[in-house]
Length: 81
Ligand SMILES: [Zn+2]
Image 1 (spheres, rainbow, N blue to C red):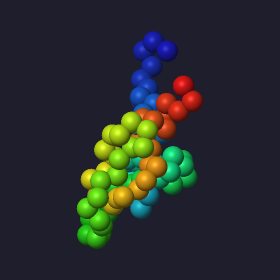
Image 2: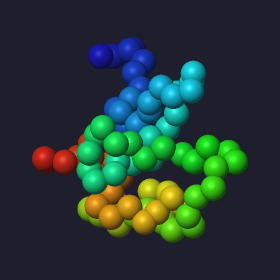
Image 3: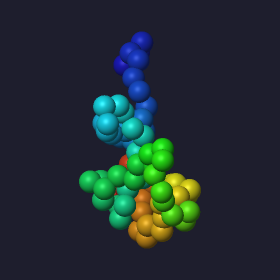
Image 4: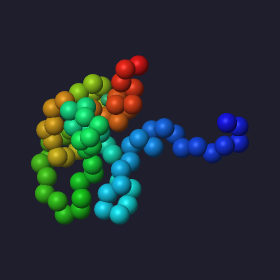
């Protein structure tokens, strides 16, 4: 492992390929890995309700809510530990 460059695991799991580029994943709706919470695209109309992590209470996103039962990326990675 010495001398080998590697990305932190948090970066590897928290990105998705969308619209021809890598997009950051902010969290997951309902703790479901197949339902990522993505940044709002420019020009999109959204609600102004926060999305909070149902496990640790961290703010996932400042708009697009409410989304009850959402999980942040950190809690998804640490589940089962
Ligand atoms: Zn959390």
